[in-house]
Image (tube, rainbow, N blue to C red):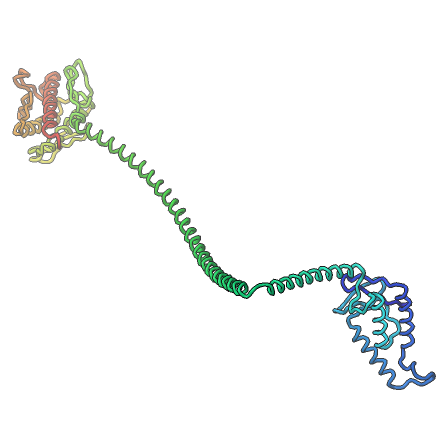
Length: 434
């Protein structure tokens, strides 16, 4: 047997029916069964008319339209669709007329609530609703009392006091208007200040970026400064070293440093090479030839320093293979060296080369004696006879090897190198800056 159940409008909980409601529900079912067909109200045995089916269909449609907010559910399901006031649960029994269903529903509402209401509520929701209504009632009563006190106070105030209060009220309203206007101005100022603050922040960020870039540039410049300082100190150190070397070089005699002439017993040496030989001190021809090469280079350097051009011969200093070339005769080379194993007594060209060398030395002596101060060589030179000597030597010694002894030839070479040593001192003193 089907039954009708109702839900609370607020909490959607099922409403518990009393015994009177259940009995009413049975009567409602019977009433619905009895009113299944509207034609049953006529006489028994009367045949149904053709319009009865259409009226039944119309009643069913009206019932469905009126119950469009209702959902027919089983006993285990409770749901609601639409925005109706309550939900019908369970199977719908035999379809009755719309008026009978509405009467049955109003009767159930009256039993559930005890009064005629549009929305069914459960007990808890009813208590909550009553509490809310009591609170609203208390607030309304308090407002009424406040209004009554205000009316009583107004009636007891005199006309002057009322005018004073009204003036005070106007003053307060004016003050309020002024404060509102001031507030608007403050809000505008705040907007302007916010805009200015944003601009200041943007500018600050830009300045910070510029400051960071400036710091990077400063660091780069400081690094370059350190590098330049190191380079400057290095240049200063090199300059100091160069100045020291220059001072030392200015004090140094280039000729004396390049050509060292001294005596080693009966022999004279130039740059460590002995020029000459004796039976007691034999010297190889390679060393003698090298000494002649140093002597030729020295004579050519002295002539260039003094600006002298030799008239009859041209020197060609080539170490151990030095020679002289005649400027007047055929340009035949006069060797200023002697080949090893060859007797110098048979080598006439070697003697001619030594005599020509002595002639070049005499040309330099004559040119140097004209200078200021004049050069004064200790030993006299007779280039035509190939002799070197003088009063200090006691006699003249021949520079030739033919018809001569080793001791006399070596002594002539020694006198010649002594004259070279004096020439070095003279050139160093006179051509110091040059």
